[in-house]
Image 1: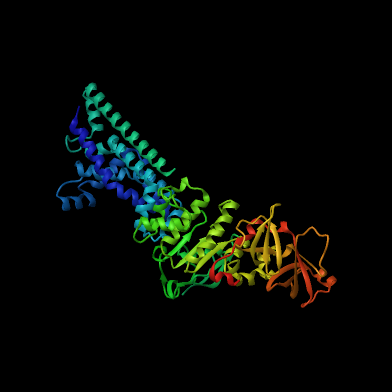
Image 2: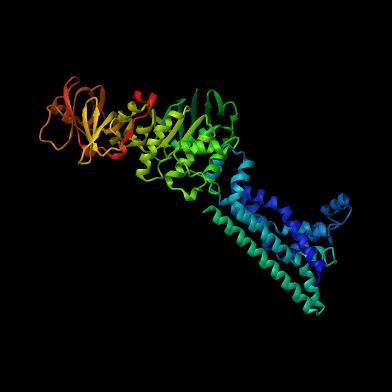
Length: 222
Length: 366
């Protein structure tokens, strides 16, 4: 059992969720309520990571983050370390490949809030921020929670992109999914089985948590 | 001290209207769906901006396209009751009311809920309230903002008839507390006549006719847009007693009036809406007639219309009753202004929701 890999994965998933939560709320709300030119293109771009093969997506990220790229150079100058094959690089990659999971369910959640309720909130004197906090978020919450749970679970399990961008450096980029693969390659089926079981447990727990949260919310509203 | 509105637009709905509502006055915008009346209301609220428009309250501009002023809805101090109430489903009645307050105050919320007869229901969520109760919460929430204008968008259309009658009475009673301009959007002419001081008939975004409720409701031409059978007057009356056979005897300046059971104690003031097309005129006092109500009066005016019908204004005991009869009948009877005449009204022709309690104070003037 590779505890370092497990904690690394949890840390990666935690950071991804923390950073994507505001993105999920703001981008989801914006896409739900605003009509603008090229909205379809934006929505398609957000969904792109879902359909691209992980290795292809990982390859492009590797090229984009590499020392030869403007992004890689900029990162090197500002932070003094390289973006590829580092934990920070994994976080950035994780944020990008989780965009569809973080934004789509939140967008659906906000779309479910009736236009009239938002108008009523404004007519009650609530500013757009207070309306978001007092009326929209409490009603769109199931969508946002779903988005975060999917993001968390998906980060724990992502393999191809992590391997392409981060490699398998213990304590830095070797996540639990990669550790499982390593163990299988080394014919250490027992360790692989234990780690797989741990992942199954965590996944079941997060799904149970989502169901419980949304049923509690449903009860509150009826 | 008034709400002044001017709006012009070509799309998505043609709009060209100017109107003014004084403080404490209730103006009903009456029209069919798609006439633009709700769009006018949304313009006042800031939920829609016509191409050219000006909305001001007490001289302060909320919207002035010429001057580039356009306050967002939350910066306009107004109360809105939406057609479907739009209550916040995750909040209790009290929380809904407090959401509209600058400084949430549970005691004040309780007081306002009491005012709309929701005592003891403050902790309920909207899903646990009946349609009529939800409507009252919506009204309480609109009032909690201490609005400088109150907007009611078809507020009674989603409740059953019995509830609607009760709500009418409550709104009439509540009027004593409302000192801001009130705009009621409705397609129901009866509702407008029961509740409004002034009326504006809207058709294709234009005001066909605006005036006091009595003026507009006696104008067959203007009401053509709403269906010609809407011409009617409000006759003030006092409940004299309830008879054993289910009829209520009312006392009017023109004599007794028998109607199907009217709620209220003897001595209570009511107003009865008498539809002009239900009134029969007779020169002689008829006998052997099933109709219970025969009011003696004098022909004041005979107003011809485009069709075969005319509107005869009859003075009965200082009030006016209208009769829609055919031009042919007027000729056969040789009716002329000044002639004595009897207005005959079937008891059963007055619908229950055409009787409203008399309003207090300035409202009696009508």
